Length: 544
Image (cartoon, rainbow, N blue to C red; front, side, top):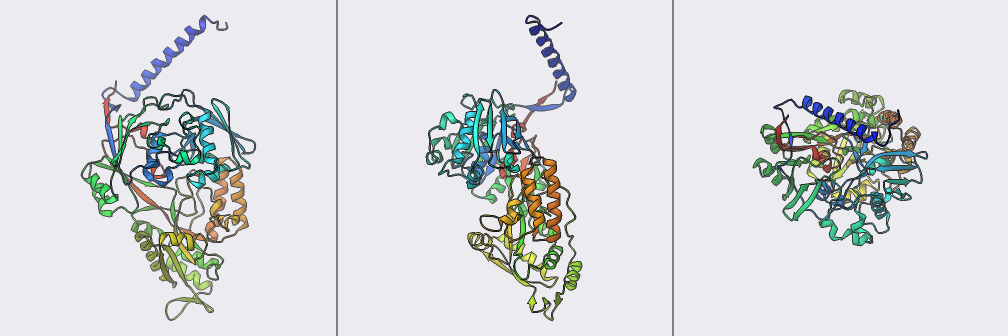
């Protein structure tokens, strides 16, 4: 018998009743009586090293505390999962059609801004059109992303992005926080940059900003957050002058947590590791150290030299001396969804490296430096004049000289190094830190079309096989196929060695053990540590 209008409410009530009983039983079985479960309430205080300036996701990249706050107050269409896989956020689902040129997002129903106004597709359109506006004063990479992209609202719950050509990484860049049109409409790019809104932001994220001062920021749990209110009632970011002061504040229990960078004092890390009051989370990101070779130079056009120097590099020792890190072998950070198991990168074996150089005609002279005809195995390694970077370069010098190379470390002012040496490709070898971002796309770094500025193929490297696989990987949205193509890229890259990827530096996230619920993730940006902040808790109650 078909359901009639009078029978349907009764049927619905029965279904809801069964579902409620099932939920109660599931909770009871998952949390036996007497077991502690998360409870609402409490306060969490974290230390940071910069005061906020402009709490707006479009402009937050210049100040890490602004980026932290943007991640807490605002939400994007998508979020990056622990391995960088795009996951639903304000968009509950999406379709990619038109050979990868159309992205249609279906927004969650019932989402409200923190001032209780309804969220809609118009807010998404407003945000991305602001990024594409002439005179936009935020990250130029955001503006470049939106060049030629047409964004429109099909209805209040549906947004479409139309691209001029397929670009598989596009989805991973749509994590940018959405702005409220009803509060900002009519402002030009300059006015948006200096708007009072940036000191009193209103978002759709898990936390509501309550107070801002030079000493810190206080936020409260958002009771209407669409994924459920955070367990912790109050979150504070407290400002300290530098990382040493941050570590001291942890020791003295002024704060409950802090993210310490790769340059943190080993004594501070050792103290925290030995103190049972703290849990330490080792976190690495997509940024990694790399040595570029100018493959058009007479010395580094020799593949045998590049391969031998890679084999003479003790990456594990370099990472340990730098405070820890994860080895990178093929320009795609381990832990990312796209990181396939590549062919084995050269193991550290200085004896084998020396033998390979001998076979390639590079013989040691009486001074210990290798020569091939009239050419000496001698070059300059340029890098930024930062203590940690120079120490890393000096250790590379020591390792390579052991196999007969003469290396001169050239420390340079950071701006000079980047603007006058690295980007113009005016170096023999260069030690740098690069960050491909949440999507691993190696195209900007290794496709031959990127040899000329503003491309980032800094090794002046060209390989038709690599060009082919990187082009195809950009044109397919099939993640499994992209992973297969990146495995091919890794094999070609490792075999030819146009550069030596070293390691992703390690960050240390310290939290008092009373803070529970933190989930491990790649550190796409330092703000990624807050990826599941709504699940953290400092209070518990007894289960049913």
